[in-house]
Image (cartoon, rainbow, N blue to C red; front, top):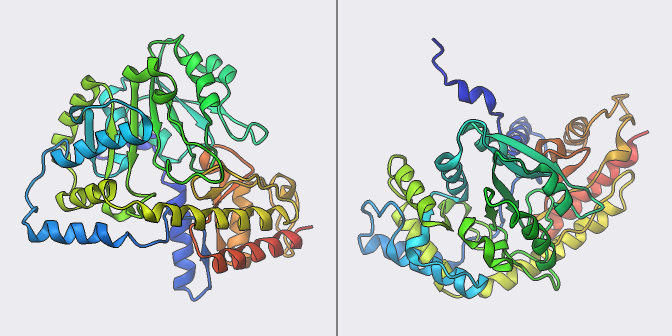
Length: 400
């Protein structure tokens, strides 16, 4: 009898974490490395949020919290969904968890039976299919293209749906592509879903506030109220409020699903960190001035990276609508050789050779289900990004 559960044989390690660790290892060896592999804002958590956490400690808010989340935060989440998204959730429809990843995992664990199918557009965040696999489900990947802005097309979704389809996962703006769906694009997706009442929608809106230019964010239950009762709307404070380490995610959805997730969470964590919840409350209800500052900085960085990588030999780099990633194609580099004679046969070879030659760490697109591409996180200073992009240009120019 094996000691390790069979379910883990279906799971792959996170590619983004693996690249980050390789970069750390090279740094430990004395190499100069620029890591553009981490999906994390480089800004500090706003001061008023940190102050709220300190005040919570001093008030003695250090006991076990309610499993679903402290009432004040759940009420604030419901107000946020109404204020910003036009969604009428009650506090009783809300669950708070230890990060957005915990929300997603519990939703799948609460609903997936062996053989159930989950549609995931590619490219996708690396953890979606691994979570589905752990829960015994089957991920059905639907490819998107650069020509369509890496967005799911209604006809492709229609073809992918079967009687076993339980979930569609939508992530907008997207990790890794930065693609974000307009109101009209979501409406086209929604029209397909209305014809298939067995399909629920898990919308990952964690990058909601990081959209640029004139783009207007929309979420699917807002666009099509007919899908409200089968949508789990997930969000959190990690990206827009630079609170990745605080580990607070939240969601609202159908009562039966929230109840099931509550039961699971009660046997797992007994609720998210009480102090972090009070900080998240301050994030949602306190000053929002920093959001404009974050957006301006990220938009400038996006434009810098898109421009410089667009000038690199053998690369194509579309300009995304949101998040803090670009997802260039390195298709024209495949089959070429490094100065040492190494043939670039895949995007894995491309990012490995780039790291070894120039000390720039990015993540291969095949880890996100789409290649030959690579993901660049522009959550770094302008100077760092300019240095990194110059090195990527030099690396590409060296290929023959």
